[in-house]
Image (cartoon, rainbow, N blue to C red; front, side):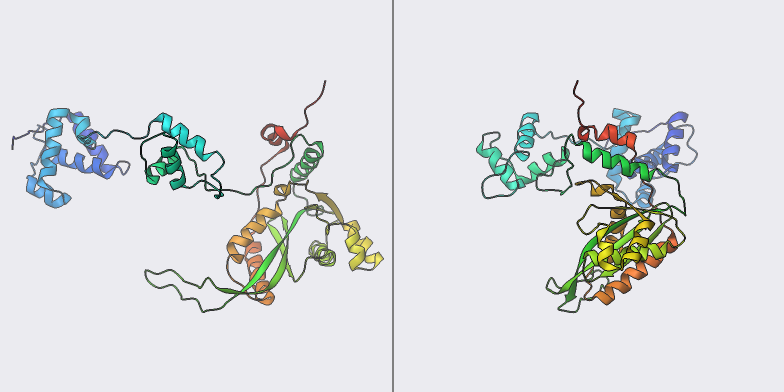
Amino acid sequence: MKKYIVTLTKEEREELLSITSKGKHESQKVINALILLDVDEGAHQQNRVKNEDIARVLNISMRKIDRVKRRFVEEGFEKSLGKRKPEREYKRKADGELEAHLIALSCSEPPEGFSRWTLRLLADKAVELNYIESISHESVRRILKKNELKPWKQKAWVIPPQNSGSFVANMEKILDVYKRPYDPLRPVVCMDESPKQLIAETRKPIPASPGQPERYDYEYRRCGVSNIFIASEPLCGKRLVSVTSRRTKRDWAQFLEKIAKHYCHAELITLVMDNLSTHEAGALYKAFEPAKAKELLDRFKFVYTPKHGSWLNVAEIELSVLSRQCLNRRIDSIEKLREEVNAWQANRNNLRAKINWQFRTDDARIRLSRLYPTLEE
């Protein structure tokens, strides 16, 4: 093989030393830099290293060293540090026109008998419409991935009404409530509720072992349904959780009594909650004597989220944390559920985990301008 001699300038050696001393470069570039430093025959090289020693220390082949030296001599300093470009060129099957057709297809209605497009359906349809002679589903996947499209994925979301004065009025009222500074005598508390299905195992799960995750059987036994009430004070990092067997007006009224006792020193509690049929002042009179019901009612000021605007309730965030950290498993009895939820509540209250609500009225008027009515001249 032709002998290639590498001679580095002082500036080139300094740059190579910088590459090898900082962990900000690709491993291939670092290895090439080390090779060039060791095979340098310039005046700045103090100790010449043999190719056999370089190969042994860097755990590379002798041919790798020769290739780097040849690229330095024939292509230059910068080219010798990068990856070698492939000599073969492959003709691209998918051009911009095909990509546009596939994107349009993935956004259209799927064929009859299918709920959504799949990769294979898109590939077959592209061939059927003569967009291309042949294409694999894997090629379709790469095209959609590049354009960040997933036609098989759907996401449920609460879609608020367009041009609704009632919606934006309630929304801005809640956003004004969230702007209030912390006041222990007039706390802002958010409340929400969610059902929880009680499920028992039919077979004992297999615990995790080295190289194997925990395994459980898909079969299960239903043990009824319970309900979880949660109240959260975002600015203070407090939350109160109650598990009930039902979600009637009486259950809601009894949970309000727990909130009132929890904030016994508060003069007035602003309670943000969803506008459900059970969340009404009359429920207190169905659960308690009139005098006690009136006493409780005077402790609260109710603020309701607008219809299709439950996302404005901060308690939904707290309920989501509870679901991810505690409820994402099979629990077979309401007693066990209460134990787990109470333990989670105590731990999170000790952490004083707060919720930093940053969505303001000015943001809503810009980002949700489509919801505001258009003024008629």
